Image 1: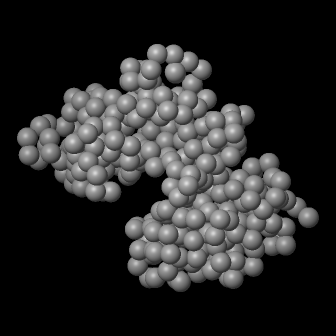
Image 2 (image 1 turned 180 degrees about the horizontal axis):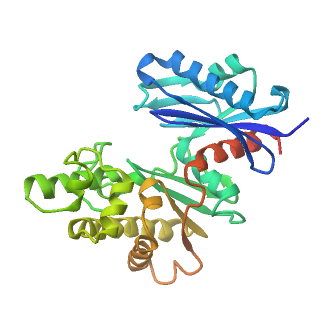
Length: 324
């Protein structure tokens, strides 16, 4: 029997499924829209549909699929596969593992999407061969994953790795979680968009961002930020100076506390930017870490891009099912 698994990257807008062999080769993929507003049962039907499509496209026998791994948003219980709360899906206490196994008849394993992305980088990407890794993914929000002694670390209440919610500026901007001064409230793409709106719309600052977004500053994509930096846009560079500082503060604190061998930075914002961005973060981290705590700690860019989710989910399926 072939040693194949399915990895599923589940988001608020799309579901990506892939059949992946034992060497980490992606044999096929299938993508469907999430359509979360249609209700929980329909979304799970769509996950099952994307899995079946991926298997069909792969040309492998369904009997060769030993397990399914899923990276899902929101706090969840990896032991039971219950999604406790996923606000972008409108989910509360959804037994995703049980529901999906009932539909496809294949053992299914669920973990937080950022944990899964970090696991993907650990097994197939930048973190190969490293035992202790922290993944930080900077996009719409900021998420994190922790791998200790080669295993995902979940913590007592299964919420370890919420790096976006460490406080880096007491009394700072209000975060979506309700607290003030979180890293996510200062360095995520959402936080940057707020800073651009304030500078351009309220203070009348000039920026190429206005042209690149056709004046719509509600959501600023990572590619737009990259173009603005390439154009040496003064406002963009000023905002990124603050962003790199706060990411450095966060990383310095993580290194002081945990001292992992590697920090992996990923997500849309990091992927879109050049190495100067990472160098600035490294410099800031060194400033805020204790002397010598960064010795031997690598701060690197993620390597898998959009595939970190499906590859991490495949790794999860293998580890949890014993597929090897």
